[in-house]
Amino acid sequence: MLEYNKVSFLWESKAIMNIKVAVIGGGPAGYPAAITAANLGAEVTLIEKSHLGGVCLNSGCIPSKSLLDAAHRFDVIKQIGSLCREDVSAQTQSIFQNLSWPKIQARQKALTQKLSLGIAAMLRQAKVNVISATARFKDKNTLLLQTQNGTTELAFDYAIVCCGSTAFVPAPFDKIREHIHDNSTIFSLEKLPASLIIVGGGVIGCEFATLMSSLGVKVSIVEMQNRLLPTLDEGLSRLIQTDLQKRGVTLLLGKKASDAKVKNEQKVLTLDDGSEIKAECVLAAIGRSCDLTELMPENAGLSWDRKGLKNVNPHTLQITDTLYAAGDVTGLSLLAHAATRQGQVAANNICGQADTYRNELVPNAVYTSPELASVGLSKQQAQEQGLEIKIHKCFMLANGRALTMDAAQGYVEIISRKEDGLLLGATIASAHASEMISTITLALHGGLNVQQLKKVIFPHPTISEAIADALAK
Image (cartoon, rainbow, N blue to C red; front, side):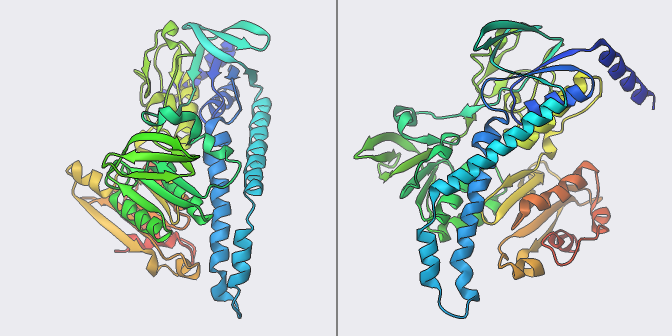
């Protein structure tokens, strides 16, 4: 109670002093940070040089999920014949052949615009001053803002750097940079390509392979590791590899491109084994990189590399006495929901509301078919740490709701500590896995054990019942 009173008094004193907070970047880290600080009484200025919502909203998470939803609808059309009295294969094929990529694209663009306007409205409601400008540091308490009307200075008591990241396009793809797409520019495709090479078998690569193969595109994935999704649980990797191969996706694992060129309007990649592959379109989904050259953080005493700012406290997000960071530039996570939480934590700490960010409890979701999700420790990670664990597993083949949806592919695997049943993590592969993982995330935040989570009543019939079924074993 004494600590709580101390924190409350600190917030009240700062609010009375009307501290000035500058937020650099209006993406999923920046705008929540700005709104949080403003609601705590700070005078907040948000600087965004492009579009509110950042990459996630304008050329990332939201557009890709809109496209994936469209692709899923066409998958359903392909399967509808089994429920019809007469053969409708000709009709369903006609619908599929007449899909309109321009309409699919227009739908996702209208959606992103609507959400961007919503963010602007929230910022206005919170009385955040939004400036369209390019920012650079003059010193640790001053920014120089380049607007259409010239350069102005902005003094601040605290600043939160939320500049995000850009697509990483290394050699040899840099030679044909203007002829290929990255994980942002892919959304500007004017027509659906007949064939697509995806370089990189991570989250973005697997999601686009699912999307494009559903829409009839011939897809190949080139991944230098020996499996897809190399940072996730091996079981999830095996499952999605099987699904993509069933879809006709060519997987070139353990290979990388040594050369790239354009020939007769085709993009040709030479692999390290000397073989060549070609396609109408190439997506370089190799990762992302931070470039803070324009911001000139060194003027404020900050150092950085392509992974982001250095010396960021992973729990408070503080760098110096006046500077904080949130989002991709922290080097902690490249996930939008992690960025949002980081922005809130940084703003809370600036305004005296002591808060802590826990990167180990950030859930992951991959929007393939089936969806994949995880949080906390995987089986392999727990074993590497020398923990004695118990594995609780249930296959979706035993789930009534999954069977009614023809979505019985996948499983729920929950990891607990053997000695006391403390929950350590989970991996889920199923329809709606991205929603189900929140239950485990909440349990991990609360420090629950198996016996406590087993007391939760799940509605029947639901896919989420698989969590309870897993714990029953």
